Image: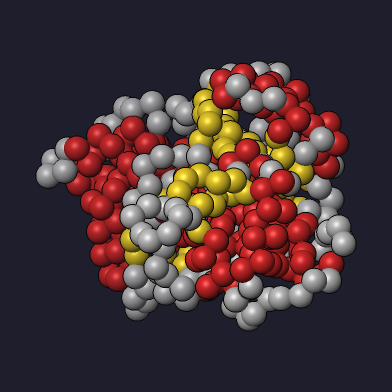
Length: 397
């Protein structure tokens, strides 16, 4: 990091933002470690830390011991400086999951409260629903309303920031125009929304098998199909947020009795119908795949999984041929249920039917990847906002 020094308002703000960024990135640092990392003088470092502490952005969390001289204070970001609520909105028509999964996090990423909501708290009114979820999470965590900073939504649709509207979503009330800015005004917090598959890709990069990949594509296999394209430093979202909606890609000329599109070929309902032809009677496609994997070696189970892998390989080929990523991660409820067994069958079918050799892995995440990604995205947004606010603030002379 280039040396930051000076007494002007601009340089002081730059010093503060650089120090805050380091505390967020490193977790804990002593005054001496901050001096080494920033190149600031001892008096300037002390002044910056005093300012951040008085502003409630940093705090002393301990002291070093064992060395000569007085013990050094250990600094960290103040966890309560910002609070984030993440809400995963689900289309539950073909799953057994609750329609909402939500979590409240502090600035360090610690989860203060988390809950699933098995029914819509406000019967189709998104503003009232989110308000009720936030109130419940605050009560669980013992947090006052005014301390909430940011809301991150994960939605089974595409978010168009130009209109503030969530498109291609089949959840009552959530497609009305201008919903996201309406939520921001009603709740008096900043609000971001993103496609659930994009958020799952964020979680996969931070926590899963894609952590060491320069870029990758995530193929979501659930009630619906989706694809997220991670470019390394950003996600490809498209002009209106609709990049990756591969379920709409037609399959041939849709002869009678044949799937019209990729969703009809490998989406949850189609997979459940396929499983039924092999004698499986689970409540969801996810349950049927889980049963088939457990019965691996059984003729009907192996035949079903092989047929399913052939279908998924078609979807995989579309992604691999169009994007040519260094890695494709299979994720979503169906991929989680199939695990390594399904991944191996898909890779075999992919290689058998195409000349493409894109590496394929299955997600290692067992939790709600959309909620995890929403937490990660919300925290990143808040942390960047805090750093930017310091960088451009006019600090006292």
